[in-house]
Amino acid sequence: MAVLYAALACEVFIQSYLQKLASSNVRVAKWLEWVETRARQSGRGGGASIGTYYDLGLYLATGRSLKDEMSLWKEFLTLSAARNEVSHKGVIPEGYDARKAVEAAWGIIDWVEGPAP
Image (cartoon, rainbow, N blue to C red; front, side, top):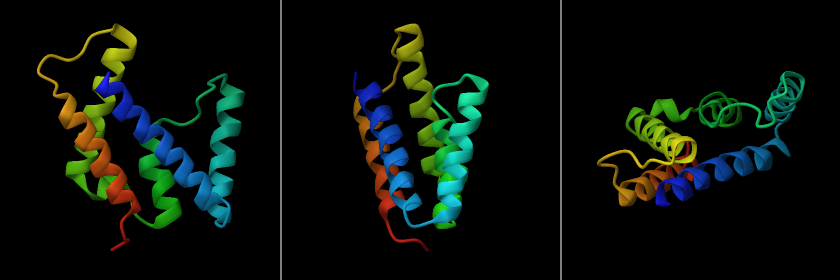
C-alpha cells in the first residue's frame, strides 16, 4: 500500500502545485487548460500523464523539469512503474522497498518546492 500512497502523494502534489502557480502564471494556466481540453476530446478523463506534469508542466511554470535532476527522475519512473504494477496487476514488484517509495516521494516533493537554481 505504501507504493500507492507514495505515488498518489506525488500525483496530487504536482497537480495542486501547478494549479496554484496557474493562478498567477498565464502560460501555465493556458497549458493546463490545453491539457484538460485534449483529455476531454480524446475521452481520457485523467489528462496528461503525471510524468508530463513533472516534466513539461513544471518546466513551463518554473523553468526547470524533474528531468533536470536525473536521479529523482529515475526514482519517479520506478515509483510510477511500481504503482502501475500494484494498481493494474495487484502485484508488488519483487524486491521493492516501501520505505524507498515513501523516501522517493518526499525527495521529489522537496526538490520541486525547493529554490530554483
